[in-house]
Length: 354
Image 1: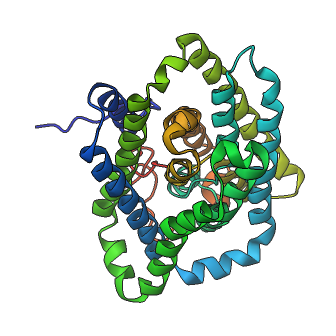
Image 2: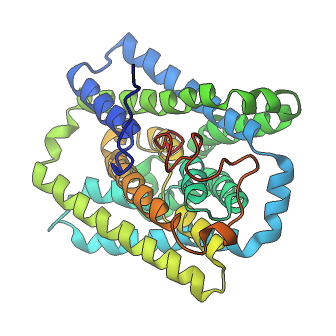
């Protein structure tokens, strides 16, 4: 039988459908009582294991080599933790005309979350950009965000609003940073295994996020907070986020050009500097917002889906640039364009997760 595949022109990743289905499942069958406690504990363990895998996958040599490209990484960090939050603060003027205060807080939290790892790498590879730079930029942003995101949230949202404390910072470090460092330490022994089975372990990536989404939205259903969000407000939120994403995509592309980066580096800056990580943002929101986490991460959920669809289209178009083949470094072992392993012509964007 012929295997059914998503049409190459369709920018919707099947994983987005799974995310929406998980939200629907939480709305119909939310976890309650003991089941909620078990789900919450399992989601915490899953995210810790996910960051352990991130640490095991990242070559220490690649990280050290990436430090030499410090201007690019500094540019991505500024986009992620300075420019994004400035736009988030500017959106305060949209309350209460377009956004409610809780939705605005979620939008502001979205702007404080670190950049992605997997999707930055995947899109940069598809567009034939500087893949090693994207690997390091995404990893450095995620590590910096473990500390910067809670501190920025406490400063901009207020300690009371996010429940920030030393204990919450310790919980985030234990859940994200410690497993990452453990993966780095054990990479010498397990790195080959992780690389060999990266497709199978990719299921852990997707499953971890789905589990955390189900846990967070189940708690939101139990708290009855969805009565606070009307369809009109959701539409307004989508419009605001579409503008935010468009502005960041334009700013990172032309800003990187103004800073003197070449095409390959501009691609890495655009994809690493314009996106936000669901994998990092969900557990942080669970710790910082508690029972209100589901409403707080709603803007991040919507932005996550939007950035995947838009960046998939942009990456595919960039791959057809005349200078793409000769200007962009590729990952070792990358298949030529149009082969079965090529993410543009062959299989769907299964790597584009976060």
